[in-house]
Image (cartoon, rainbow, N blue to C red; front, side, top):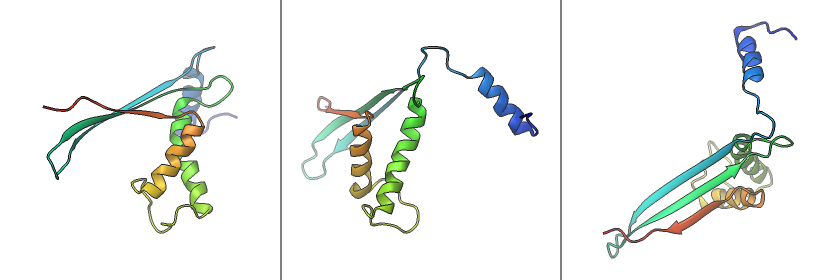
Amino acid sequence: DVPSTPLDVLCALCLQKLKYAPNEKDMIIMKHVFEIEYEKDGWRESRESVMLDFGLQPNDNSSMARTVTLPLAIAIRALTEGRITQTRGVVRPLQKEVYQQILSEIADLGIKFEEKTLPPLL
């Protein structure tokens, strides 16, 4: 197939130039630090959540593909199976009903967040 539009030409060039080299993988690291202050007693702490994931090339998907598409696929399946009851409008993963299912299933697929509480803030 000969590219016929500017976008097709760009895609063809990117496919040629951005291929992984033999034995090359991608890696994603995500780190969140949460500063928490409890109103009741004023206690403060920091919690850290870190995800480190490597691609499964050359025989499977990149880490970028897995970490972007799998959570969405899990949420769609949960919606169609009735495991998520909020079925109107845009559903953001801020409710436990949504995020617990996604985190549990992606952990089964090897994508995990390691969490720890950091020393108290002064």
